[in-house]
Length: 415
Image 1 (cartoon, rainbow, N blue to C red):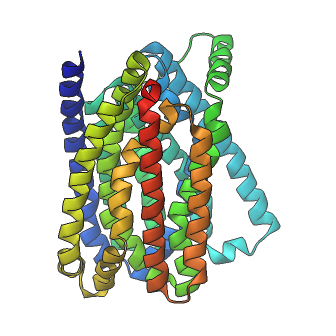
Image 2 (image 1 turned 90 degrees about the vertical axis):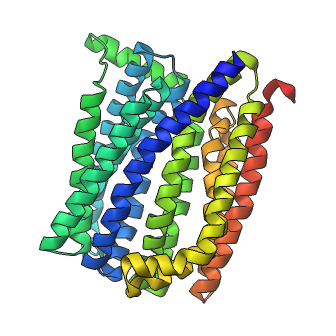
């Protein structure tokens, strides 16, 4: 049984990694064009807006989509996905109403951001939430081929629209509109690939949603604030850097995170998509999954080491060759951020142990520490180079704590 599991586990990871690699090649190649169409300043404004949108995307689902891997296979999980979609629509409607009221009560908001980007914020967040839900559903069902298709379609639609609109008007607004329209197209494709399983009668629909909310209530109670804090901590660097050091520095940092952070994050998420299904099943059956945890940790550590060694010597040259001289400093920032990238690649896929072990409350405490570190590191130091280096080191140190914590959870009944 365990030998079969090992074989299926690594074969599944290889399958998802292949799809993820293709999905990442598309925005990386697109970035070669985007870097020449848009200035660092415009890219910095877009990145600041996108940071807020991603944060709203976390709120929209209530993090209920994270619970899909814990639901039973087949129809029960399909009904759970329906419950997540309904929840997302309800929250998005509330957020849109709140933004309209705030923009009317405080007109100064529209002076700091274009009205188009403001109106696109919640709809874009909803597309992010829906895509997250469908991808989580596909991963939980073990439909890794469909998962890869969803990611490839999403990357293609967003990248092509941002480039196409950039030829007409290369501004932060067109980047935002392109992201929204691409996400909308990707949502339609995802729903076509995995049609929604809607409960029959209206009373059954309401009952299904209420039962799902009650069964998985720890996710909005603990995971939602924890992940909202995590999202805020992830987006704050762009926002704080833009405020303290200007849109150009923020744009250079955003390009670094896009070119290096996104591919590493998606590759790590590919491991997560397989790890959470197999680890949850293994944990339920044996009361622990430490062997699987250790094997995954070793592979991620080797991959992280190879990445760090390569980027120490090549980062600046790569940014100049592929994006032009004006983006050279993004390569310098990449070397400062290596501790963060390296540990994030290892820790993020293993983080699902928190949900398997039901320790969301400890995850919330860790996220609060992360938020405090982020704000302190980026607000105290006057020099942006020092601030980014301290931020990277602090993030890496907290990830060490997270790895130790998640390993302890994987021991389960062995403890």
